[in-house]
Length: 78
Image (cartoon, rainbow, N blue to C red; front, side):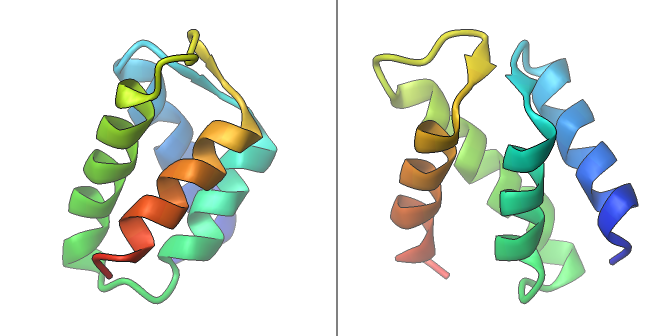
């Protein structure tokens, strides 16, 4: 998976859901998803987004702490 393409796709995915994801946060997700099979990446992103949405302090702009917290929770499943 090409990093720039993957990063753009992740940013678009979150934007469609109404969230602004900074470039460096998208790179965190790219790095954490690199070992996940292509078919499972969409489900991984859905779980990350769902977890971020459940965090009480999340505004439209997603902070690094929110992404890291979601990654920690989801990593338990992968």
